[in-house]
Length: 250
Image (cartoon, rainbow, N blue to C red):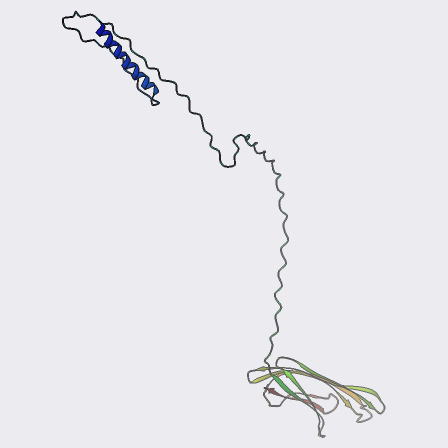
């Protein structure tokens, strides 16, 4: 009997130690199987005694507290600060009025065309005015000017003439010229303003004055004289001739 109690006590202590160790382990442990009653070794020639089955030991796991939730905050955030207020609602915008039609822009005027300049050369122009009445000896007047290529030149003269029985009369002589060199040719545009004094040839034809106006454009050779124009007096056989010689000065 004492031997049986000793074996039962030893088995109980073993099971109690195993249960305490399982309670100290954090990992979940499967429920222990019920322990069957241990039958002590019967003594020889001892009568068999019925044994009472031992009660099953129930191992109670300690409750594991719930893991607290951790809130991650970024740098600069105050965990104690209250949450920001919600953004205010946007006020409805009024519909935009249609744009008024704009007037078309005025066209940009084209840039002014710069006048072409001529060559850096001069032309010597010699004008000869020949005044001849009938077969009498002609009277010649010479006018000279130096004009740059594609430029202009002009000469103005004026004389007061006093004649017997006639009021004082002004006699002008004006010449304008615009030369232009084209290769070995010279293009020239010239004009002449000249007045002629007519003496009285008879009682029927008193003394008077005739005005001549000439303008012409012509092509000349370098250094070769050419007659530009010749005019006649409407009352007499008087003729006035305009001759020019253009020479390129290099």
